[in-house]
Image 1 (tube, one colour):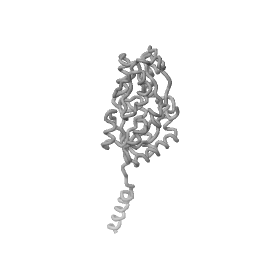
Image 2 (cartoon, one colour):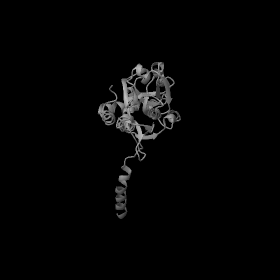
Image 3 (cartoon, one colour):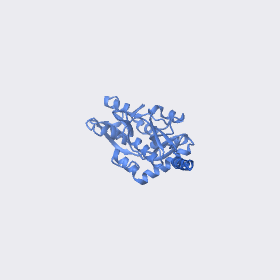
Image 4 (cartoon, rainbow, N blue to C red):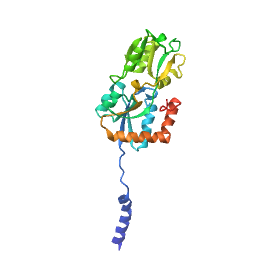
Length: 261
């Protein structure tokens, strides 16, 4: 009888272990972004990565219940990191141009950007040819061979165009007087250089949405043929737009919805 009771007690004690659900690790999406691209991706004083793209990436991962592994990767090394498999996607305002769509799988657009001129606060440049003729224009170098073609075909007719690896390098030269204006993403330049620095810089000329320059808009870049993550990211983007999470993050950084021009 004592043996029987012992077996019964042992069985009861072991039951929870037998019936416990098996825990599986979540799938992980490896995201890369430039840490020097405020307000889209930048580091806080203590080195923590943050920004619009950082929060959008986490929202996307939450929407499809995967783990987000976000890596700070300098702009010049981003494409090689993607191609080598170090990351699965670049979420960092890449234009969905025809050329890029031929080379990579892209999901989006998640931003419909506008471009504009940045000048010093005391500049007489107003965006017209009359005030720009003979001046020097700074732009960020494109990873796409034809990415800046619109700029050369338009501003290049009457200005000297100078390319920089990073937009902040062009702005430093603007401040130093080595260029007269910088042309680039209006959202980024307004947040990073105008807001809180009105005595130094201002935006000039009209806001432009240029399909030849931006393509369909800006999207997530994946390796060509990576339909696994492409499908999941399409689902995730749709979910955060419909839930209002996208609008919430966009309002936080820009005071408006970046999918609406």
